[in-house]
Amino acid sequence: MFGYFLTYFTYLVILAPVQNLSCTQNETYYDLPRFWTNTGFCPAGEIGSENLRATLLSDEVQMNLIYIAALPTNAFTHVRIHWLLKLIKFVQYTPSGVPIYDFTSLDTFLMNLNDIGLYPVIEFMTDLDGILFNNLDSADFLWQDFSYQVAGHYLNLLGPHNLRKWRFETWNEPDIPNYNRLNFTAEGFIKYVLALRRGLKAVGRNQSEALNFSLRGPAGLFKSKRKHPLCWALLQSCDSQINQCPIDVLTFHRKGQGLATEVLKESAILLESIYRKYPNIKTIPIANDEADPIAGWSTPHDYYEDVRYAAQLVYIVFLHWHAKLHSAEFQYLESISHDNAFISYHPHEFSQRTLLAHFRMNKSEPLHSQFIQKPVYAALGMLSKLAPLAADIETISLGNSTDALWLLKTCSTDNNPLYLSWLLLPRENATNLGNFIFHHQLSFVPRPKEIFAYIIEILEQRKTDPAYIWRTQTGATPFPNAQERDAMRRVQASRLQASGILLSSELILNTTDLKLPWIALFRVCSSFSSVLKQPDQVIITRITIGEVFISWREATDTVHCLKTYEIWFQPEQTTEWRYISENWHLPYPSFQYAPPDSSVSGFYKIRGVDLFNGRSKFSTPVEYIETKK
Ligand SMILES: *[C@@H]1O[C@H](CO)[C@@H](O)[C@H](O)[C@H]1NC(C)=O
Ligand SMILES: *[C@@H]1O[C@H](CO)[C@@H](O)[C@H](O)[C@H]1NC(C)=O
Ligand SMILES: *[C@@H]1O[C@H](CO)[C@@H](O)[C@H](O)[C@H]1NC(C)=O
Ligand SMILES: *[C@@H]1O[C@H](CO)[C@@H](O)[C@H](O)[C@H]1NC(C)=O
Ligand SMILES: *[C@@H]1O[C@H](CO)[C@@H](O)[C@H](O)[C@H]1NC(C)=O
Ligand SMILES: *[C@@H]1O[C@H](CO)[C@@H](O)[C@H](O)[C@H]1NC(C)=O
Ligand SMILES: *[C@@H]1O[C@H](CO)[C@@H](O)[C@H](O)[C@H]1NC(C)=O
Ligand SMILES: *[C@@H]1O[C@H](CO)[C@@H](O)[C@H](O)[C@H]1NC(C)=O
Image (cartoon, protein in one colour):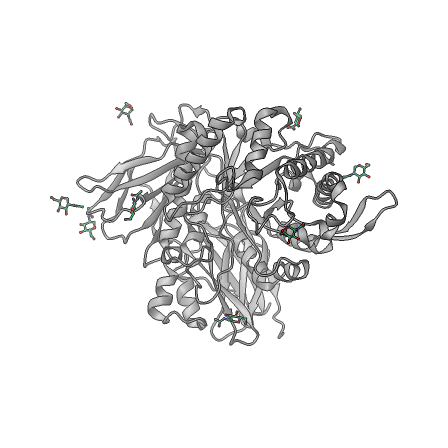
């Protein structure tokens, strides 16, 4: 049963150009690795196991994760969560002195995460329920055994096809006193990392087929060597003995001071300095675990509320893609992660570094949380629609304006029906584009009987901008009522700007009236694409009385031509099916249903609509029975 190989090493190769594609003119295209599909958070409150358990299993955290998972497949893959392993309890020692741990709480959390389709980044960040303190002499043994037990436990539970997608990482920012609760010394820290490495390796060796769990680290801030001795010492030890280096991916944290450009610049400065000191580690893959525009997730910024943060995240992705193609420091970039899976709190509902705005409905009975998707959430959905091959970022200058547009062109490989996906936005800080009409020639030639359809979807400041509704139409209320929530949700996804059969070989977008910033996604697909398959695994989650969140899985191999979803509802088996999502553009696999004056109990079924207005089959109907809690 363990006949799987880790595909880990396949994406570490340096990108090679892909030649002679029908969708390209004479530009070079490369395989586009989805290096941005990661998020993270730190649970709120005390770092005690009881509080952590309550927090991580709370309805807010679970709902937040359900939303994050309800974007198209591959919008988000990994969630990095500090202190997760503090959920593991020590039970007793075996007669031979090996600790026995109780994984029950962690199992509950990780099985939920697995069910909704997300993978964890496991940070080895715990005091092993206290047993380390009395056994400092056997720390080496305990860490090795612990990493062996953790990886082995979940390998047995979830199998190698899941586990090979998991990531294992060392302690988060071990040089920061607030994190370094074990008071690691440089020597102790290196021993700890080596011990984890040995434990993970032993799990892999235990399998009949090679299964290499890689270890990431040191998740460091890398300020001066004097201030941050642990992370620098690990790199030094790797440089002096590269074959003994316990880490497979060098992780670091670099943020900007508010701009995307700074994230890349700060990272480049750090990497140059690392490679100058330690040239032997140049070919270790790198990842910026916390590649955010500015430090401090909870410090409110007005740009976090709206399309500005959505655009910033896209810039960060674009800049890293360009750097991966062109700069020596970034050629081994493995991934970046956005630290934005936090849950916002009053009075900063929209303005913290989060994907969703959170409203704790303290005055409602029952008490519950309401989430509204911010434009940054929709932007990650747009990124998930990119095709597998991409050109370099193209800068389009605009006549007499000093501003410019940035364009990422992606397309399918030649052995598949044509799919183009282009993401276009004004460059960071653009203030005035003037009168501009974007024209772009398409080069491909249809085959006999082949037809192409297109779609343009847009995120636009003040238009697809729930925070704007909240501020201007609700007085920024902490408790938006049903109508106000409906008004916000109607503008939380990208807007359908245009769609239809492609009649000329040119894409045109008049950007004159668009409010800055905006993000446009153009997609073109062929009538030879596979037929849209029916949605699957419909899950209905209770939000409160009379309100549910409906989410489902897409058939990823057939969604290139997807335009929108339709949700149908039948209160009872004898009544008519009703189309309840009419007038909603639903490009992502979820829908929140809160009818003003009828029950949500009944049957739900979903189908997709493609760019040629073809409908998929309906999903299997799912029944929801409301209980009055
Ligand atoms: C696992 O690692 C070993 C050496 O560490 C290597 O020889 C082997 O090819 C790797 N296996 C896979 C599947 O990557
Ligand atoms: C191909 O490249 C050449 C030189 O780089 C350029 O002048 C020409 O316009 C390009 N052709 C197309 C169709 O883009
Ligand atoms: C390793 O293999 C042994 C014997 O098959 C088994 O008892 C043990 O549970 C395995 N360990 C892990 C971590 O999978
Ligand atoms: C680490 O050092 C702090 C301050 O010196 C001390 O309060 C704490 O008990 C130490 N922790 C451990 C695990 O030794
Ligand atoms: C963006 O604008 C800010 C403030 O106006 C300025 O300091 C910064 O240099 C600009 N950055 C870029 C990349 O243009
Ligand atoms: C560009 O020039 C035209 C004509 O001179 C003018 O009408 C327009 O406002 C200018 N646009 C910008 C962005 O300056
Ligand atoms: C709701 O109650 C919680 C817990 O008492 C509190 O922290 C939060 O600020 C309250 N929210 C609002 C909007 O008043
Ligand atoms: C672009 O939009 C502007 C503003 O709506 C309009 O004045 C202009 O005529 C449009 N241009 C074209 C070519 O349609």
